[in-house]
Image 1 (cartoon, rainbow, N blue to C red):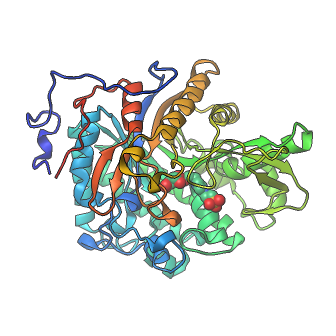
Image 2: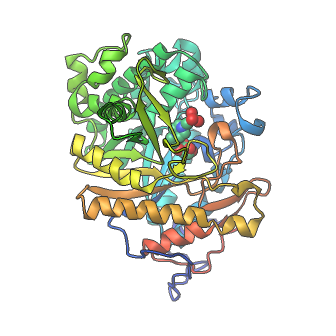
Image 3: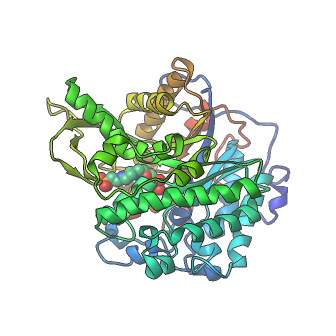
Length: 493
Ligand code: GBH
């Protein structure tokens, strides 16, 4: 392990400024530098491990993962990538690759083990060290406050995101983080993918806290919006020069046929998945399609609308895939009565795109361009940053090492999605400025455990050794990062 973070980038031990040569990467197609920057995205509960170390409290994902049957192969996040102990090596590796942006999340249960009250100095200290190492390595941290790891105590006390008691408590946690790291970090987000944690966690039970209640899911949406506004109020006072947003995920909804009802259904699906969050923020109310169908939807008051106005400085979009959507009267979906059905096959029985390892993910780069345009047309944001995009390569976990490292399907995925986004920027004039690949490392992929690999760096979970995949080389070459180590040997302990 590099002993002194302060020498990263300036130390003599591993930086050879005389050999900034890009490696050969065998890829067909465009090699022009994209018109947006590259970063790598991660999340605390998927990489850190050390769940009981230095005073971290339990999270709802610890509890959920401990229940047999919830996670494939009975995996848990207890060790994950051991980033808690190996962060310097992983940061050094990014530095060698010439990577300039890194998206990470803070674990709320590390900073406030019980959710509120007593701050855990060791948690603050850990993130202080990570952020300092990133800055010394000339990598800008983009920090997410909440990537699904609610302190268990808050779920137990009042039902977590189902209750508006969470609002001031989240704002207190946010203020703690802003005070600690606000002068070092410019780019922040409050929440990662509230659609996912509200509807899968509270509405369907396929994520923590494992509840199956649509009313709670929509309460979660509402309380997340309120908590976001309350946190941003703190942010404006404490980090006046920072930029903040909320990471929203959306699949592109392609009408199954060209019929007007199917087109309207596809639009409704986008409204349910994305506009349910973005409309309140940008327009002050839930979309009409949602309000008409969800009888128990909480109301956005004039005060809440005013608090949400101007509460994001850039649009943070997570995007992976597309589905076909058809009109279907009386349909009940994840979010309640939604009057549409979704499928990944067309009328001829053909898949919408090539399969990945994750069932939900089909390779549809054309949908990315349409998705970016939909966001731009509806909200006209000043700036869009794509905060996640990536794939689990089909069959990767079962492949022998050399084959797994030659991850051609992932390289082609990145090539084609980045080309689609480039067209959105250069031809359609979408103001997308940044692109974060999900993910730096193979990691704890929630209910799928460790077997669905999204990293551009392979992690051997037995030894914790890391190995670059071809996709890491491809991305840094495409973006013409200034390579400090053209041989790409991972920094060792
Ligand atoms: C992101 O979610 C997450 O932010 C990240 O933590 C995660 O590791 C990464 O993507 C890769 O999955 O199983 O049919 O119910 C992406 C959006 C939304 C995709 C929920 C999977 C589950 C579909 N996710 N979806 S299903």
